[in-house]
Amino acid sequence: MAKATASRTTQADGPTSLGIETYSRLRQDILDAVWAPNARLKARELCVRYAAGLSPVREALNRLLSESLVRHSAQCGFTVASFSLSELDEIVRTRRWIDEIGMRNSVRDGDDAWEERVVMACHRLSRTPRYADGVDTLRNPLWYTAHRAFHLSLIDACGSEWLKNFSMTLFDAIERYRAIARRPGLERTTHQDEHRAIADAAVGRNADLAVSLLLQHYDLTAQLVREKLHRAADALPAG
Image (cartoon, rainbow, N blue to C red; front, top):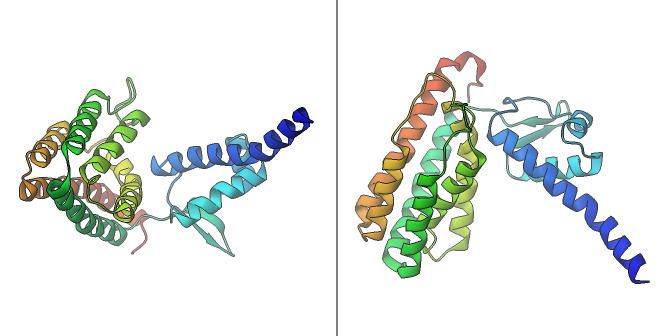
C-alpha cells in the first residue's frame, strides 16, 4: 500500500515539477531576450525545445501571461510581450516611486541584521562575474540572481511584503530591456561602484543620498536601453 501511495504521489507531483522547470527556463529565455519581442510561442515547438509535454508548457505560458511577459490573442495565440519606449518609461517611473519608499523606510527602520544583509548582498554581487566566461554579452545567470538579491536587500526592511513583491515584479519587467543593453556597442563599467555607493549610503543611514544614488542608477540603465532601442526604432511598436 505504501508503494502504491508513493507511486501516486510521484505521478501527481511530476507534471507540476516539470511545469515549474519549463516555466523557469522559458521565463529566463524571455528575460534574456532569447525570444524576440512579439515572437509566437507555439506550444508544440516549446515542447520540443524544453523537452516537456503540452500540459507543463501550457502551465508555464499561463503563469507568464499573468506576469505580463507573454500576451495572448485569439488570432496569434501566445506571443512574447513587445518592447516599447513608452513601456520602458512607465516601468522606470513606477520603479522609482516604489523603491524610493522602500529605501527610505528601510533606512529609517532597518536594524543591524538588515545592514548585514545589504553588506553581504553587495559583497556577493561584487564577487560574481557579470558575463559568462569568454562571452561579453552573455549574462551569467548567477549575476542576475545576486543582482536581484541586492536590490531586494535595499528595501527588505520597509515593512511591506506587497511593496517588496511589486518591486521585484518591476525588476523582472525591466530585465528584458537590460538584456538589450548587453548587446555590442553599449558599454557600462561602473556597476560595482554604483552598487557599493548605494549600499554604503544605505547602511550609513543617509536616506537622501541612498535614494539619489539609486535613482541615478535606474536612470543610467534606462538611458543605455533607450539608446539601443532608438537604434532599432523601426523594429519597435509605436507604444
